[in-house]
Amino acid sequence: MKASTFLCKKSYHQNIEVPLQFYLELSWENELDISKYLLDVEQFSSEWVEAYPKMKNLITQLDPDLLKTIFATTRRFIINVFCEMKKSLPFNDSILKASLVVFMRFETFYKEDWQTLRNKFTNIISDDENRHFQGELKRM
Image (cartoon, rainbow, N blue to C red):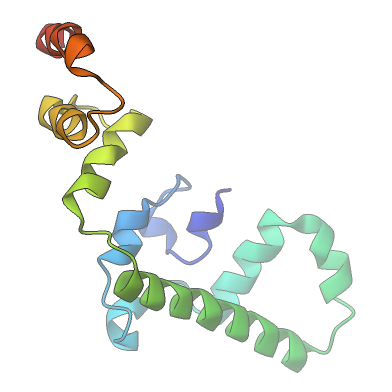
């Protein structure tokens, strides 16, 4: 199980990694808005224990109220991190979005994104290499 599935309800991820973009598009400030997508504290704790079975022996020794508080705090911390990431990091930056093609996770090959990156980072693909690069893009 991927760490990014700990928060998200199974109906939204079917045990595959949830893209960061999914989380960033949520309205984190509105608890009612995110509750339809995210696990509640009990679901979150059971997913966590399932993912880390060695922890099960350790946490069964804890007071149930304390354990609930720990998982609620952990869940809230993750939500707060996403809120701050959404505010502070440039996730809507066109170059950052274009750079996602480097990971080759898309079913479609986006020539425009590769061209955007080439134009932005001329120190990586020099003018001399650009002719070959353009030929490779046309073949795709």
